[in-house]
Image (tube, rainbow, N blue to C red; front, side, top):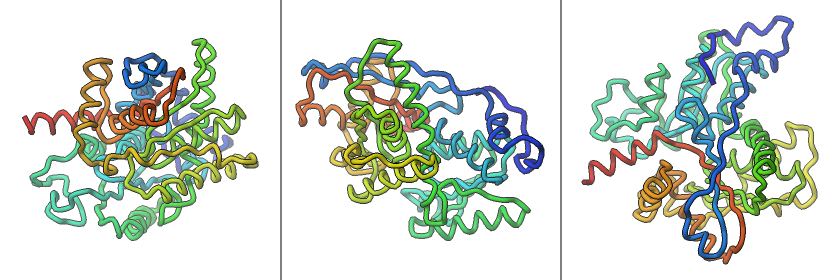
Length: 366
């Protein structure tokens, strides 16, 4: 996505529809990303082949699945008649990095509500300072968010709703109509918007599959918020192809909560799209929660080994938070479920700045 002329989304009262304005601001559609086979011994021993869908190469803000999702949120913001954005994530968030970059490029005022694993690393303050003297270095994603001029409102994990209210009120006091990416103050009600990105991407994957003469029995992806897997499931349901869309949770959510969020995502996409849910749709939800190696952001020796393997044997950078953990889950899953003679497409969801964090951590240890 090339450099866009900054525009004020508040000026939406002309003849063009908000959808047209959103398309104009976001520029040309994203290009197709490559699909290629990788070396993956855990699969090949049983006659399987693993391919990567390289969404890490999307040409904006270090790439990754969050590029598609961020564009879907910003388009929806404009379509809803809003002109400022509130994002939420922890201080490693790939989505907040991309949203910060996109909002800066489009001239959209934005605030970030953030939680962190180690609040003491920033002096125990409820608000992070741009000049923090914390002992723990800021993640590359946090540094990028701040570089785009985004003010970060820090909060504890039990104070997210109040912090969202504060961010929304601050923007309203500036005469803005703010949009919170996750819906209401509790983070529900907008699941289908993010899923739109990968329902659309699913159609493109199917077209590439035909062009390459391949047939993927399984499409697999990391599961974090459920947006990506939910969108892929919606795409498969819409196509009626019965494809296995397998998500590997890297989340700390309980399996029950993780599946519930995924179901809500599928339901909300159908509601927003005006489509009826097909009979038996829940049978298409395949979320594996037993391979998360302790949950989001936890360090694990086997995950680090997978990151090293992908770099040294496939020349593909991955990160230990999402891709390394999910690829290790795939390897264990294929063995434990005796999957054979199947072509598997694994979505590379990006997270390159998290790979840089990994390199920094590895250097500090050695």
